[in-house]
Every structure is written in C-alpha cells, then in structure tokens.
Length: 155
Image (tube, rainbow, N blue to C red):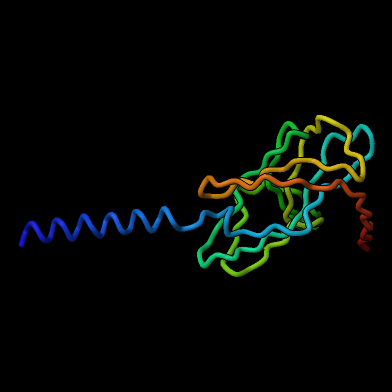
C-alpha cells in the first residue's frame, strides 16, 4: 500500500509538471493591436508607445517591463490627477485580466521611451519588446506616427 501511494504521488506530480509545460505562457495568450510610437519634434529626448493588449487566457497576466533599442530606458507609466494637475507616474505593472482588453493610450497607461537614441520620423518602424510577469516576451515592430494632442483649458 505504501508503495502504491508513493507511485500515485509521483504520477500526480509528473502530471502536474507536464501540464505546466504544455500551458501557454503570457506572451502566447496576449494579443497586441494598434501599436504605434509617437513622433516627437527634433531635440525632444522622450516619446511614448501606445497599444491595446487583449488577454485571451483564462488567468490573470501582467505587463511588467518594456525594452527598445531606440531609447536608453523604457518604463511603464500612467497619468494621475494630483492636486488638480495631471501628472505622469511610473507603474511597476499593468494588470491584464482574463478576457479583457487593456488600452495603453495618450492620457492614460503607456510605455514611456526615455533618452531617445535617434530621431523618430513618421512612417519609420521601431522595435519594442514587451516583458510579462512570467518572464515571457513579445518582440514587436511599431510604426512611428504623428499624434495631434488637443490642449484642455481649465477655468
């Protein structure tokens, strides 16, 4: 009986381990749409990347980092209203709930590209790599686009 219990325990452990190997990682279960990088005027040292991430998995995932050869640093950021002013703040992660789409867009969540290493011209493509909580990565090509931003007047 003891032998059978050990064998059964070993079989269960092996089954659980192999199920984990066949389960897709975050990068395999996330769909990226509408990615672009904002073109900036000459001399501007920072830009931002925007995109939509859809979690097609049944479990939570999170975007935890980004990388790009066009900037010295890439950080996840959001905009918050503090003391009546909109301020940009770094975030450690962007949660991606199952079955939902999270939009990284101007005025909200985005990937901040700090210390640009080259001028960004509309129409060119740049590389961006997204890094997820499980260490999986997605390498992307993003077009550079001119984005018109309207000024909001507060009375």
